Image 1: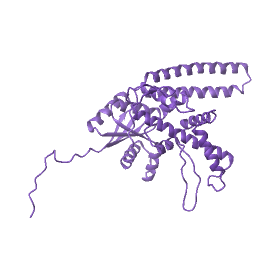
Image 2 (image 1 turned 135 degrees about the vertical axis):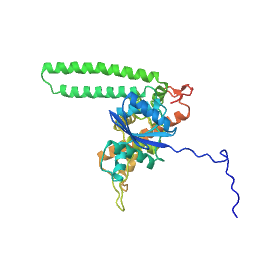
Image 3 (image 1 turned 90 degrees about the vertical axis):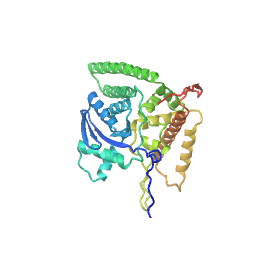
Image 4 (image 1 turned 135 degrees about the horizontal axis):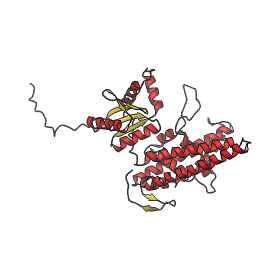
Length: 357
């Protein structure tokens, strides 16, 4: 005999969290190719972006916009999403392309690209991490940093050409160009540091990063701007993101070489110089100890890490670079957990007022 069924009231029904709705966006200078429940195209302009955000807000509160990293275009797009309070997740174009090839899609169009991005987000939804909102002037600071680096590269190239010149007129022209570029670089640097000074969170983050031996002001600026994920990742994730995590290449009885690849080259170059500065320091520090440990390990004849001297140096440098970025990640993580206090270079807390990122 079937018992009478009494339907439960809404209050008795267990609450189920609304699932995230993933929207794939393929970015370009002129348009946004969007794939959600259906394919749409929006102009990449102020009015087009406003229309796009309005449509997303009408859809659900749990929308996550997934897009590829494309330099300045993705930076402006991310700033627009943060301004409108929309969750976003930036992914590597390399991962998207490999995912597309794994799905046997060799063709490439804007419509297919945004569809692949959305399918990637749905497939790996448990591994996606929502990006933290950027500060108000973050996009402008990144642009100024890019311009400053471009001017510095121009100065270096001009000096290289100048070294081969014999004509007095050519040398005068190049010297004038170098002088003008240096003046422009000073102006850009002044504007960049003014914005950083006005941004309370960014200024405090720079000071906490400079607590680590070997890390100077310019490196702290680059880490704060180019590695915003610092402090929100595990030690393995941050090492892989920068490109200092060795990957295995083994199969069966074969023990292949360990190698590093991909990652953020600019950060890696800065870490190299910071490690050099730390190793050249007169006071004993963790990097001296790590260097000596690796030296003993490499000289062990039974070790699998035996290699020529040039390889030894590179291996030890990469290991020390990995140690530094892991330490910086841990320092930043603890600093965020404490409420982002302001700290002097001597490690004394001078302001404990918690601020939002």
